[in-house]
Length: 323
Ligand code: F6P
Image (cartoon, rainbow, N blue to C red; front, top):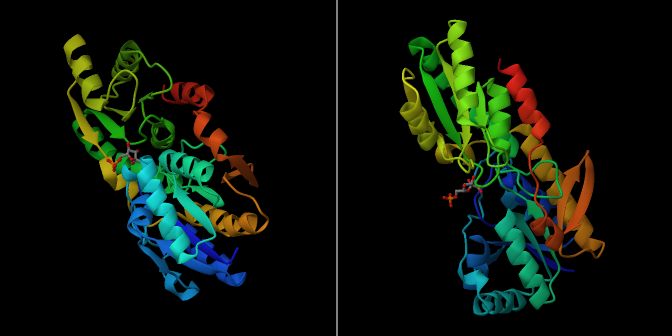
């Protein structure tokens, strides 16, 4: 391997820049030429492949977003798009790829590696933490810290007005952000995509709080919650029971932004460094992760087909602690 290219794809996540920096600098340490592909698979198809030197990635470890930009590519889902992408890589003389992203990014990498003979390693970069083969994904820690900071602020006004608040957090089909935000903010109730929380359970929490003269409560709802989003649950509660003045806040894309936490910077640095090390050892078509503080390699096929979900015992614990 002489020339490697790195790209970010799918939803951006804080810490992606730290990963790019680690990939480029480790490549430079091993005298490899590094290239950046701009806008993920889209840029690969459009030939937006540029050399990137060790000094080019200075002063980015602390920055949110991704300096390489990102995209969700429909064209890469077609054989023609992938063919064009491969031709561009060959023309630039790229020998190996480091893909930073989530499920969709790894799915693209898996298909590409079946069709063309180019080694690829994947780094899990998504705020959702829904990637199998790693305890945590790059960006998750920052996102949950952003979310609890927002929830803490909402709580001040909820407390002052004795209002009930439903706060909706991101995560697509996964409840990790909601579960951690809920536990970390001491929410009264948490709604996740993975487990049922009956509306009556929320009513019970509210009644008990009422009995103790605690008139406000924070409820965290995952956007992919199986029984509806925050607005739907708030409406259902209002239809079924009188007397709860509730407000809904959707945190939205603010959860994706901001400077990465130290944990995310360290995770991204470790994974970016190992990406080059494992490529040089001849590994290919694997996703890298850290499990119990050890590096783990998971074939793309396994990483995309295995579901990862939060522990039900943590939700149970949250129920007990919110009494
Ligand atoms: O995967 C990250 C994520 O932020 C999800 O939590 C969310 O459902 C989705 O991306 C939103 O995607 P987009 O920014 O393309 O609307």
